[in-house]
Image (tube, rainbow, N blue to C red; front, side, top):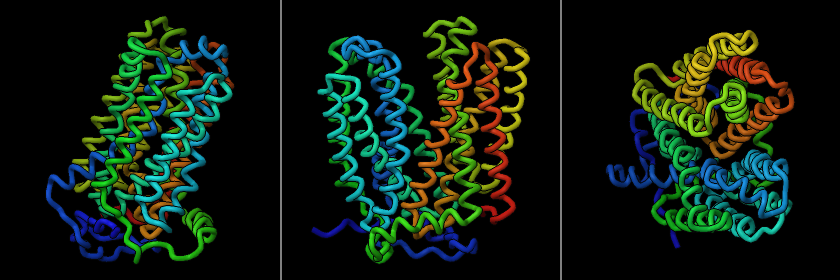
Amino acid sequence: MTEPSTCREGTSAAPERASDGRHRPSSPPDGCRSDGKSSIRVLLVLSTLMAFASISTDLYLPALPTMTTSLHADEGELELTISGYLVGFSTGQLFWGPVSDTYGRRKPVAAGLLLFIVGCIGCAVSSSAGSLIGWRIVQAVGACASVVLARAMVRDLYTGPRAAQMMSALMTVMAIAPLVGPWIGSLILRVSSWHAIFWVLVGVGIVALASLVILPETLPRSKRNHGSISNAFNVYFEIIRDPRILGYAGAGGFFYGAVFAYIAGTPFAYITYYGTSPEKYALLFAISIVGIMATNQINSRLVPHFGSDRLMRYGTVGAGIAGVMLLVVCIEQWGGLPVLVALLFTIVSANGFIVANSIAGALATFPSRAGAVSALVGASQYGFGIAGSAMVGVFADGTLSPLGIVIGIMTVGCAVCANRFGRTGPASP
């Protein structure tokens, strides 16, 4: 069977940045069908693959109390199903990136989806918390292949501002999953047990696997790494020596640390500390997601005019200023719930200017190693995310101070990394 032709859309005019920072003309499209319907189909498939990060957890969150009783476990053990998933998701990306640079994108994605399906089946038939945690890690290692390689595929297909635009579009679609995931999970619980949620995820994995039929192989054989797979992993040592990568990955990583601190800390801050209802908390959380979707759309429209690097720096500075203000507000207890919500909304909404642009910039730095770069960026994001959420829990003292301090440090670190990048590499056109 021959591989589908590689489709490289939107590259005829956009220059490609070499690893030395200089721009060079893009290669002409190779067997590309640039019609709108084809582009939309590819975008939908890539969006589905990107959404695996959220859907794998958001869908079963409403079932956690029921699962605690069913598995005769305590809350701490069930929380490990989330942290274990994040660890597997973070470290697994470092495997799939170099593999895809060697064997292409579609085969590793298919392998990851099969592993995801196996992990979901294991979760569905688990009879203990320990078993569930183990299968959640398997599920995460499989799911992360879809996410890390979807980002690499965007870099294969698009360059320059167009790549940042498409990344923003994917982030917008991804943001829908946290909005509808818990709601769908609760509907499943009304008609069946928590096991059914994981069987639904099995079905999602099968549908995603079948959709690969319409997704082209975006990395032709001529552009793959033809060395041994062991040498492919050595590319990480080359990548991390480039200060631009550290700037991009650091900006995105520190921001994810702030976002995960927000996710871990706001239930206590909103519900316990300020006494809001769970329903109001869900509404406030949903408003932040809408903010993320809105700024991603704004970013997509502004990128051709201002450049992705400049917008990223603006976003990190805005998040950093809001983070410092949040730190002061939480320590001094100024303004009450409205001020807290407004500052957190500002910080989280900066996602639209930071995440997509930092990913696109990092991928443009080493275009021939897009898989490995995507993996490194993704691993740093979730690694910082784990650290951010953990610090909020470790330093919890019954006040808002830990939330403000962690988010303040993370957002300032985000701005510093973006500024460091700005002094070592050229801005995007």
